[in-house]
Figure 1 (cartoon, rainbow, N blue to C red):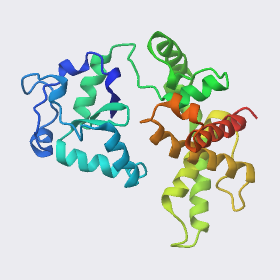
Figure 2: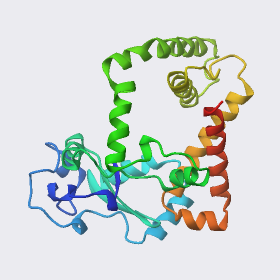
Figure 3: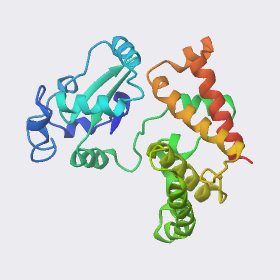
Figure 4: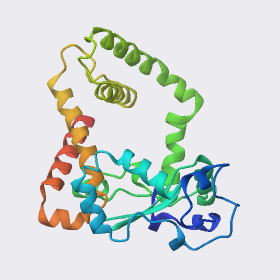
Length: 266
């Protein structure tokens, strides 16, 4: 779990962190909570002090596309709780389930959730309403309670089962049609997840699992890929500056979101 420093609230008071402890000494026997004297935030291990140098290194090493491997290395080197400065952001990473549980308990009923500035900026640019994923506080709680009744209650979940089952059957049939060694599992699972999500949310199929894919569906698929690919580097850069300079990264991000919203409003 990754948390921006501004969103930590009172959570850190629950964490006794000993700087410099290895993964083995920290992770063995469970989480950190309740096992050592409480130290200040700055005592948490840090990947590197200069956020802009860290950003440059990450960019040059293609770290945005291999972020999971970067986190594994940091976990092994610094332990299950560490800080990271990238660009203008400082984040706290928490890996062990019991430590995440401590965070959830400390948050209360209206947690301050990490926002994604580029997603908010696009919605403000196009005058779209923020969804529950981008809201906070009482506004988030109200929307989440209403959403829980529609998608998270046992009866509601049961209603999605036939939809997801039909997509799963088509996915298995598609895999059986493909020649061994001629396809990439990650790519096909991405198609499956989009097909299943859209069928559940919009009640319609994209056609991403068909022998001949629909051009509009492929356009939507590529837009989602670009949106996800551009989101991660923008997390660590000032969005107002990207907008002012009208960088390619920002233009690609906005264009991808525009395509996604166009499809969602058909």
